[in-house]
Structures are given as C-alpha cells and as structure tokens.
Image (cartoon, rainbow, N blue to C red; front, side, top):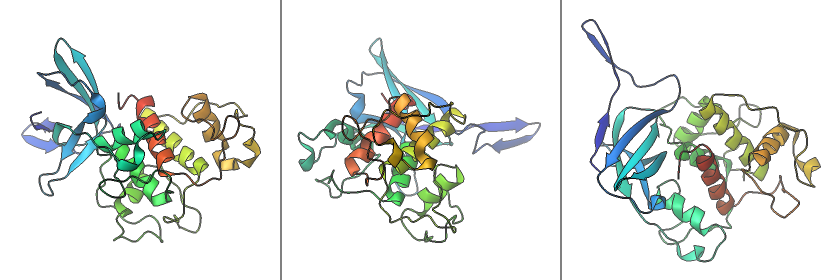
Length: 272
C-alpha cells in the first residue's frame, strides 16, 4: 500500500504538540486498499523506520468488503505505516505440526529462522528470546530505556525488548535484580508472560480462575504460575503436551513458542 504517516497533534491556542504516547497502549487506525488481499497470513501492517530502513510488525486484521480490503491496525505510536505482502517458508518445516503457525509468523516479520532456510522447530528458547518475541508480536516500540536487570547488558541484542517488557509488567526477574536471560524458558513461564500480555492489552487483572487445571500433572505447576496456566486453559490458549499432561517444567521449543504467540494474537483479535 501507500505509506501513511499517522500523527496525533494536540492544538491549544497557538501551541501545537505532537502526542507520542497515549493512555491505552493501542489505538485503532484503518487503511483502505483498492484490491483484495486473498491470503492475510502472508500480509501485514508494518511500521517503517526511515532512518534504518527497517520494517517492524504491527498487529493488524484484514477484512475484504466489496472488492476492497480494509486493514485495521492496532498501533501505539505515531509514524509511517504501510501494508506489505511476504511469503516465507522453511526447508525443515514441511509436514511439521506447527508449519502453518511458524510460516504465518515469519511471513508477518514476527519471527526469524535460525538461517534463511531453516527454522529449527525443536530447538529450545531462552527467556530473553521469548520476551523479545512477545514484544515484537505486540508491535511495541522499544525506545531506549534504562536497564532494569543487572544481568542484562545494555549492549545485548535483546536489551531493548527485555527492558520494554519489564517496564510494561510483561516479565519479572528471578530475584536479586536478575532476569537470567540465557536460561531456557519453561512452558509455564511462557504461559505467565502470555497472560500478562492479555491483561495489559485488555487493561484488566484477569478473571477469577478455577482452582484446578485440566491437567493430571497440576501438582508440578509452580505456585506463581498456577493461576496463569488455569486461566490460559479456560480461554483455550493452551493444550497439554500429551492428552492429559501439561509438562510445566519442560523447556519450551521454538515451535511451541511460535504457536503461543499466534494463539495470543488471534485471541486478542490482533491477527486474522
């Protein structure tokens, strides 16, 4: 599409001030296109950075009406927005249970492969990597922020994402001011972050969840994660690793992380 410059300007008497941030982190904007986007899994709204030339995913939903496509964009910053189409596949995802989920997120510029042609779905995910994936999936701006954790180097590639996630309450440390960024994230930790994201977007603290999860290994779920896992199961966001067990302490794989982000975005109606 054309590149659309969105700005919100407050005028007061003779003064003009551009508003960069708003109370709720997400505002809805609409771009109308004079064509039909047949496959929304290969198209997305992006925020264009004219300085670096980079495109950053922005949550967006496509609706076709009368031969035209209406794109609802859920952003939270002024800037240059456009619609791009991109189809990404990986050689090692053919026939994999998460193939469609992974390729959709890659096409939308939310996740990257380990190489240009491989995704490595069975590889495990660190706490920093999942925090970055969550921030990217929500389309959050990562302005330069002071470091929140003592073990997150200001020069680390994930520092802006982890600091943004911490500032918004999406992640917590492991104690003593540390985040443990390179530790593999567990399945229950991933669910806790996902539920925090839902509460941030919906501006609530969650509903009173039932005390018991539908999983036979509930007693293995940490106390701090029990409510999040129960609520996520009630909302249909998670399934067990087997028919009866959740395996909360297992390290999450890249394929599982991709599925969680896709489930989150579809639940929030941030993606078709």
